[in-house]
Each structure stands twice: as C-alpha cells, then as structure tokens.
Length: 161
Image (tube, rainbow, N blue to C red; front, side):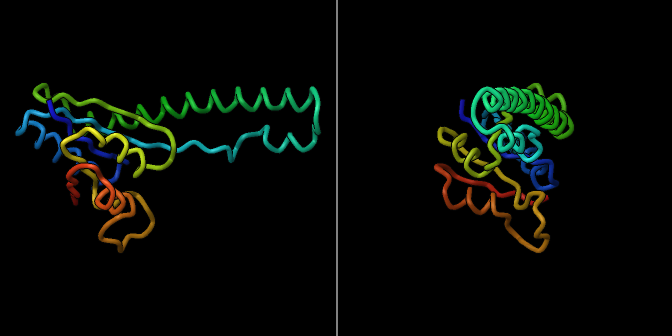
C-alpha cells in the first residue's frame, strides 16, 4: 500500500491539506501518515542559570542531573501535548473515516521541513499547506512548503484553504 505523508500545524491550509490527502488516499487506496512537528526549548530551564554559581564538583553534577530530569519530564509532557493537538486535528478533519488508514506521528525537533522530508523518503506523495502559522501574512508560499517543494524525494502537493 502506498503512503501519503501530510504535514499539519493547525493552520487552515494544513487542515485543507489533510482533508485533500484523505480524499486522495481513498481514490488510490493509500495510507495517510499525518506528521506534526513540535519544538522543545531550554529557554525556561531553571537549572541552566544555576551552572555558573556551582562552579565544578558535586554541586555542578547535581545541577546537571536535575537539568536532565527537568528536560526529560518536559520532553514527555510536550510530546503528550503535541500528540493531543495532532489527534484533535485529525478527529476534526477526518472524523471516523474507516475506509482510510490514518497514522499519526508527532516528531520533536522544531525543524518541520527536515522532518517532513525524512518521513517522505519512501512515500508516493508529500502534501503540505501553502502557508502555516508564520507571521508573514502576505506570502503566497510559506518557508516549509517552499523547502518541501525544492527538496522532496517524491511528488509534492501544495494545498490552499
């Protein structure tokens, strides 16, 4: 069974891309892989500022350990949140389409184009929205869509809402 990979970020264009992908999958008997890429930053890590006051030794090692625990907990919580957002979008757009297999993939990394291109390595089609949630409203084609069109290992469909 061939695969259609579609990127979603919650924007109107990505929701339209998902709906188009499910319809296309039904026509060609394909599976849909819905990918949501989320970021994880250390900007609020309370232990990063503590390193300078500990110097070296046991205090610093303790702060490193606490920082790693904090990062792991935050990573797990962020993954759960991203998976929930993804699930909500799929439920809203696709509903209970029993005739199409829809897999959901939440990927961390904060580099959506790279993640979509990696996921699209063995697929028949990559589908993206024309624009995401970025701040440049006047653009006809967003940066993620542009990168996917230029570098995808397969055909790319760009969808507008």
